Image (cartoon, rainbow over all chains, first blue to last red; front, side, top):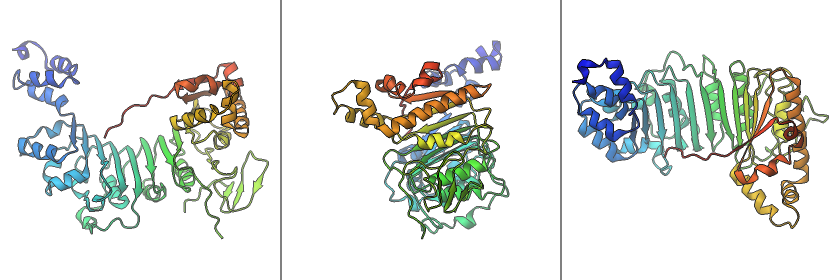
Length: 264
Length: 175
């Protein structure tokens, strides 16, 4: 009935004030059909899949990705180990999250299994993705980088890991090289870059620095853990010299930087 | 290997612009010894805010980095020094072993050489403040129990009111 008397914008505004009250929002959702989209926008703004049950439950409740409330999600949290273990056909549901702007790929589980995780299904699932945060025990550098490059509008990037894998990454034999076409242009990278990599930032930074379009970050947050990290930081600062407005350097307290071995 | 284009840095040869020492040994990153890597910010002239989180009371690397911002960086508004909880706790645990005044104990725990570096840093903050039309403000982020002690390391900046003290806000992260 309210719909008849109040403009939609005003109703949106009223419901917007309830964005952090899920119980009330669920009640609002039952008012009328026209209220469903404006409440779902807030109810499903953050989607988290950090346990196998979460994903199973989601797929059972919303079997059709096209009609699921996934399209309301702005932030998506994924534990790649959970998702991969729970659903081999991960591709189906992830495509529904095509309007996600912030993706967090995180896991605090053991490093075992990270080498088996495939990021192919996640590539480019949301063409408007603006920020990506990867926080895992071991960073499969090459595969993560392919994931990064699949989001053309990416502005903010964070990579946090205790270790980084080296070389072509990790043995899962991923037919990923062929699975996804390489993008013609790299992301814009005009926001912030945060790097805290236990194995050193070098290899990851080199990939960034070799991008054709360059990097244009305005904010740089780095943690020095490895002896080469200061030099890597300087290279990043130089690459972003014309745009950099904020620089945050942390020296890891537990792992004080030591003298590099002399090159004889 | 990532090699910066700054002409003052070459493999195996370092010429630090504001140092009276010139080293030509193999210690590429650490012209001041352990814990003092060289960070050249001279090219990043749009910098507005820099934050240095310490792992020890050695601030030579901070001074070295800030010296490279003189005189081009006219937009630099704030310099933040972050003293993390672990460092603060360790310092306090060490200082309790002495039986002098709290301030003396604190300075003893920080170390004489480090205290001198902080005085240099103090002087640099004042210099940056006075040399620019848009003042560069200093900020120290510390644990609440350490606020009064840190000020004694920065006497001139404290006296001129150009250093702001902030407390650590340890929030929760996701996961």
